[in-house]
Amino acid sequence: MTEAERAGFIETVWDYYAHHGRHDLPWRIPEADGSFNPYKIVVSELMLQQTQVARVIPKYAAFLTRFPSARALAEAELGDVLRAWQGLGYNRRAKFLWQAAQRVVEQGSFPHTVSDLMRLPGVGANTAGAIAAYVFNQPAVFVETNIRSVYMYHFTRDDQIVSDDFIRDAVARTLDSEHPREFYWALMDYGTYLKTKVRNNQQSKHYVKQSAFHGSKRQVRGQVLRLLSAQAYTSKQLAAAIPDERLPVVLTDLKHEGLIMQKKGTYHLADGTI
Image 1 (cartoon, rainbow, N blue to C red):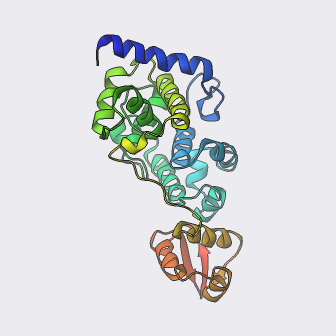
Image 2: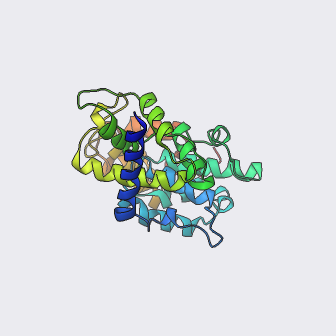
Image 3: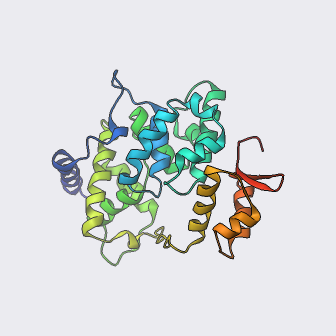
């Protein structure tokens, strides 16, 4: 990458953001003092994992209304958190978020560094980098699917298989270190656009096509949690409502993950005490 290529790339990203950026996304709106609430950013980042923005926006608003702070979330029962999460899928994220809130309350403050952020449940290196950039405006380097799309489109051949190390290096060399928060927003929006025009994420060594939801084990998991959100069920009642041979395995998995519990012959959403 020459200096001219770097400068041209940065100009392209900023130009796209200036004309087409999603400036009104709720998690991009600062507090009255201009700061960004770390709790709200963590909520948005965990919700946005494997879930489209359009689905997240209403759930994000409702979730923050129900749990407006880390303390409010930490003090809630897990079952109530899972109910609020309904419709987003991948419900382990809800439990991770609940556990992360408890960790923050126990520590008395929110982590500021990528390494400390990674100690929060459900927060890996890329999510920690995103939180550091969006909350604290730190020039942390991280990679996700939209960012991959941008850098593969600009800096790879069509037949080139690319590792995330390649992407991280390119991000580090082009990141606007004075304005990392907005630059990542710009990358995200530009990447979202490119994904509608160029299907290049298959070039990534880390690309995994998401399996179909309909008929999947994930669908059965969602059905169980949706039913238990309303009331307790016996095994027979669940089997009648969900006639799927994978149901016993799903129930075992959900119990092992601490998302449901079985008491006196009936299944309930977990309350966080087991």
